[in-house]
Length: 149
Image (cartoon, rainbow, N blue to C red; front, side, top):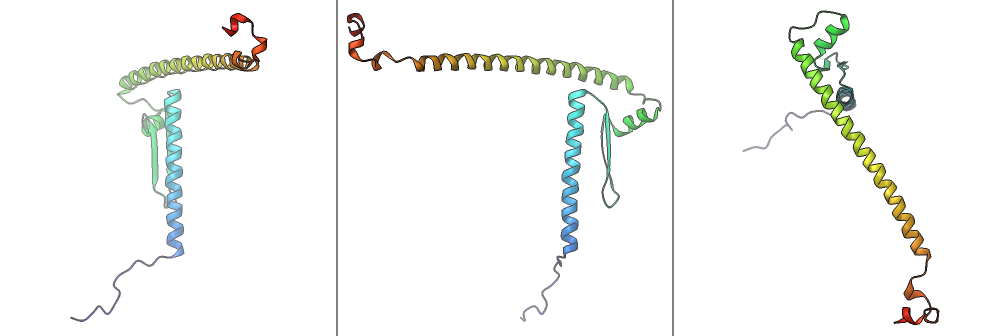
């Protein structure tokens, strides 16, 4: 059996392919970052949002809450979709939950501030005690008979 005469099919790497790959990776990371920020905005404020991003090749990528279509229709002043009653219930529930979470967050921040104040007081007390000599560090001749016993 004779050995292979050719190396077979192999992908030829070029600078162009590497640059395109880098652009694609950068685009994907940036797109994910934009979507993440949009999602945070929805969560924190209960707002409706739509994001449309086109890649260099012209392919559209979308993110929308509750959907891109619903936000676009609202923006254009078109009639709401028939399931808007459900949507308004979801929005109402979400707003109540956001308010509850904000209250919890505020309460936790208040507790944290109280703990920080308590820490300051304890630190000052500890420093005050550190400046006073401890009884065992005081020379023996400075103690009275009761303290020595």
